[in-house]
Length: 173
Image (cartoon, rainbow, N blue to C red; front, top):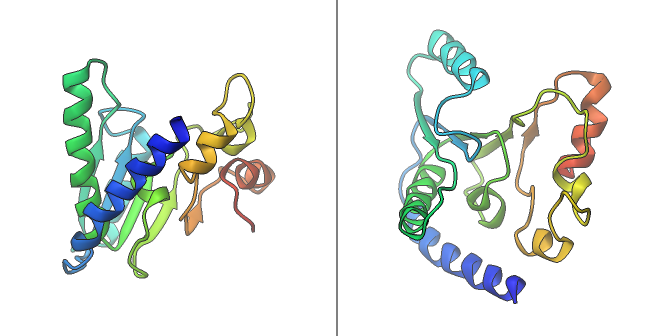
């Protein structure tokens, strides 16, 4: 039943997203997060570096944890449409966790997606490594939600941990 609901959700998102891709791409980076409602230290440092090196690039932060309560969840769903607008009109998307709008939608070819995972150390199984485990997502739900798809780049803290990030995010070298 969950898989069917997610399939319907994805179809609805794709219908809403299609006309947004007709908008012109702007010289912009959009940051997406469900980890926090505030900029992480990593995002603050990256924002500053981009400002210093590329001052003409607009930077937009779409940072929202999924809230409790039905009314707040409905508002969150409306906010997802804003995320889709920014994905459709930005050159780069940077995220620090799984994003439904990044993984489930087909984007313009010129959008580059960078996964900057929210945890620096690979000290536990995470992402796709935990699918099907007690702590992780159900495998059918993970597949239905296209978990960790559409990334162009995945940042890892070191060469030694890159292998773990590749497994967790499902990408090759």
